[in-house]
Length: 245
Image (tube, rainbow, N blue to C red):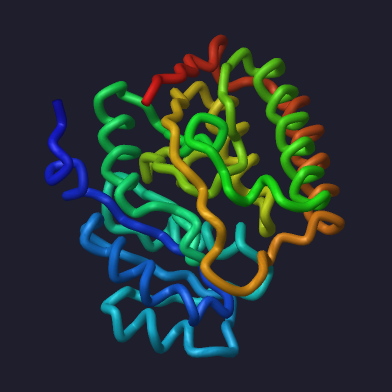
């Protein structure tokens, strides 16, 4: 069994930010010890996000201003270690789950492991009609993805996940916006890499409001699914495996 300490020795933590000054300091304080390298990829914040991140010891890079996906793709190219863990800057993810994601990836010989909010619970999917619509839309897309690639995931859009760096660089990610998480799952399956998940709880963001705008995001999500669902698999089988955790 892989120990938590050895699991983190080859991990780059990537955190996308944009005007998260009220939460990024606490997130970095609790998360940086769980990775060998921490990259904050910033979307040109106008508050103290960059200053706080640098003071905490994180490496800060700027995206080209085209969205979250663009920033994540830039950070993937800068990662120095074999495994990348993505997490959000708003305090909704538990840094204690980082070694769980990485250990699960290694022990089950997986290429991508998603933190499932269905298995772990989410405080962000209840409390308003907009959140309900977001949850139902996510489930609808998930069902279509599972059917198309013969996998059995319970969550495909949570930004909290671990992926092998070589895989992230080889699958040809293109999305600039929030559809990047869904695209990552589909392209991983298209290339025949192995996908798993563990339960991770999603908490309420510590402050501010989500940058996700449903009206602007869902067209991208649907477009991405339609385009990639018509893409021929690179292997005869996706070899996708869902572990438990």
